Length: 294
Image (cartoon, rainbow, N blue to C red; front, side, top):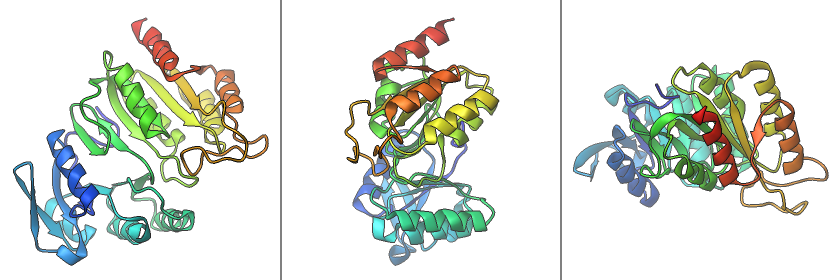
């Protein structure tokens, strides 16, 4: 069993005819993802061919869902159009919308999340500024390389795309049930806690790796959730121990402000509730390997 993305998922790509959407549609198909079409209002009625498969282009997400049964959207829409694309996906009530785009204004993201809440949270949003979701051997939605790991029984949730890839590679001998990149913007749709809850409930996930970074208090809140609700072993890593105060590091949300959001504070919060925290990604992988070998 995988979390949120399975071999039965039917994926559409918002922005499939653009350069990034086109490139990653082909890559997802090579990974075995069941891509069933794309969305571009200006090219509705056309079709494009990727990896020998003819994919229809629809005018709206609702049209794509009605005609293909799609239940997942991956959005490769430029930042200035992303709010409208998100609102369209939410209004269509697609169950899962994965937003890859970087650079979406925080106000636009906040508006879209508020709209999702107003609509009853029928659409799970992952991202923005995220690498997507991969359930190895089953489906791959986003930009996560498909050939760096194997199917297994570890769940991974991460703010960082690059660290997602490194952890998947370092633990490829054990493998993963699902890898979820939640993104590093100040406002995101799906949180560490959401992923922890899903992995705790998944009978085919035995242990969890949680990767965080400086900025905000998401990791501290996740630690509190682990203490109260998670019985499976959790290993953590927090990026940014040497980050200077007041300087954004890579992600828009990765910034230390005064004494708030430091890597050390997050590490202490996690260790206080029994989460083993590695000093480096490789040490984190070693800690997980120790747990899985027992």
